[in-house]
Image (cartoon, rainbow, N blue to C red; front, side):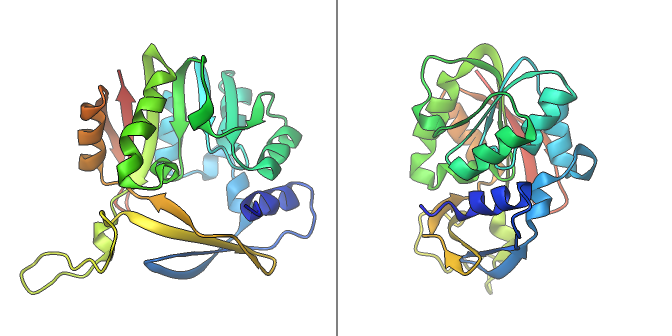
Length: 235
């Protein structure tokens, strides 16, 4: 991994001539992302993210923390004990420079012998799972990290709206994947391109059913304007 996403974050944090990220998926054309968006304040965050942060309590694990804006708010404003993790070394370096006290490079799937009251997975938190077939293992790992009365706050979007209807009113989904929310995601930055990675968008009903199958309760907390939602999972 070239860690281009993390490189853009660290360039912005250190004022090292940051440029826009270019993102592309199997169902969308190349699009530009301003890196400054990852450094947004609470007041600039979407309503779903604000709602998630308002529900956070106790000892918090922020998975896929990126530039650390959610962790920073919870640490400094909500005064919570927050651990921020990401697989990007550059992103975690930026988080540390921003003042996040507990930031570490780690794949959350390798965390053992730790428990949390709140686990955050935001900005399409289901994406980290990658593929639908990996969802049981993904949920079981999250469950293993929860205190008995803990909560997982996770968001995603139902991408069904992006596909055309056929003559019978159904959706025509031109995909070889098991599930229409399985995408291949590619990032480019400063003339370099990262290897494609699997990224999963999950409709709420599929998440709810998978949660039930893995011993978790699911609650639909709120829905956004673009087929997105925030869910709360608990034991």
